[in-house]
Length: 551
Ligand SMILES: Nc1ncnc2c1ncn2[C@@H]1O[C@H](COP(=O)(O)OP(=O)(O)OP(=O)(O)O)[C@@H](O)[C@H]1O
Ligand SMILES: [Mg+2]
Image (cartoon, protein in one colour):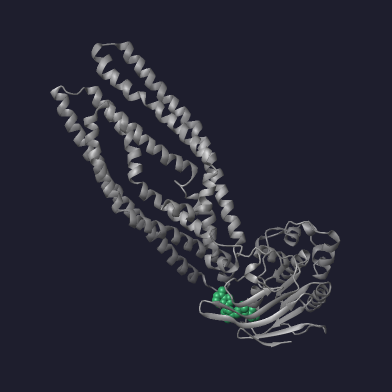
């Protein structure tokens, strides 16, 4: 079982294991904090059994001073220590977040779609923030609790073994009660996290689409959908809370039973003169110290469920394969072949039995009615899908043998849905990479962006709002094309790049793409546009997911 856990949660546990020294340090300091307090019950016993009966006021004073000193030292240690704990916690959660974030950025198309944006957001933020026990502080807390139980039980045994035996009778009873709640709590914790992610996805979708919802007078539609997700989340939270509360309430009976039994036994023995008052007072003091760790251990399985549900969610993401098996590194290609390639969404084939060959220096025009599979074909060429049927080869090498990351270096893809980032215009074009100034100017001219930039007060340094909301559709389109041209990919894929362009900009871009192809690159354009200048190209016409003409 341990092996199974280690394998399943490998990458998360690795981040945890890298901090093993910190975990041990936290444990040692916490242990010192516990040991500091141990003389207190012994001092109490001396006060009650020796100094008070003998009227030794100095002894009483000395013991009280010592108790105060011990407690203040404990608090002082606690103060500085909690600052350290906070830092370790934040640092650990940041490391996990970076791991999750890196994985999200490298997700392949289909996995990205299947997780959903809101859900990914929750995994990278709230899920990690909600971890309580499976973090360095939590791990050392668990170890400390075990040590506390051992230490305090030993002290109790030392103070009075008969009272300790009474206590030990109740331990299996409490344990059995907790076990009954294991399974329902585990499944309810999973529901809470899943429903929260769904609620967050809904919110994200609606926030993204506020102008559209308003324009369509669809606010009540949005409220209704939001309401369903909210009710689901609330119900699961309440169900989890009720189950937890039931367990807590049942278990408060057990300490009451223990206390009654101990007082009965001790009272009887004190009356008989077989036990001193100091013994029962110091026993109760240590019992009070033992109560929390014991309660923690019994309820541990229930408490850990939320963390385990989160870990499960994180690991589902972290274990998603992002570099598809292939180790073959490609840095150029002469020919990409499709042999009877089909792509399905569920049972539905959206492209079927597509066979074609794309050579270096080819200009391929993919045409066909809406929904005929143009975008899907471009996505497949870009390597977004690994679950195609048929065969794809790059220079004869099966696609699955090729490193996806290496293949991506060859590809530049301007998708149908443009992405613009909240940053400067220049960073939106270069994506933070250094570019040759002369080439940049050339690309800006090609994409008809120069005139637009010239009138901006800060030129290329002008800020662009989130999702490019301060740009026109055509400007966004031209920025996306320019961004890809700047990368100079060997194979440039463009999905409907002329959608928002005026006739002049469109013609200019068409000529620039032809030119780009003639300078030793491959260009594939999916477009409804028929007004291309005369030049040599390969035409693919699609209908219903099939290639119907290819010449
Ligand atoms: N994520 C998806 N899940 C299920 N079906 C999908 C998905 N994406 C696309 N499809 C379906 O695949 C078919 C081809 O879609 P695709 O986007 O490739 O068409 P297209 O030719 O690019 O259309 P358009 O010209 O409108 O952009 C469509 O019937 C579409 O409904
Ligand atoms: Mg399309």
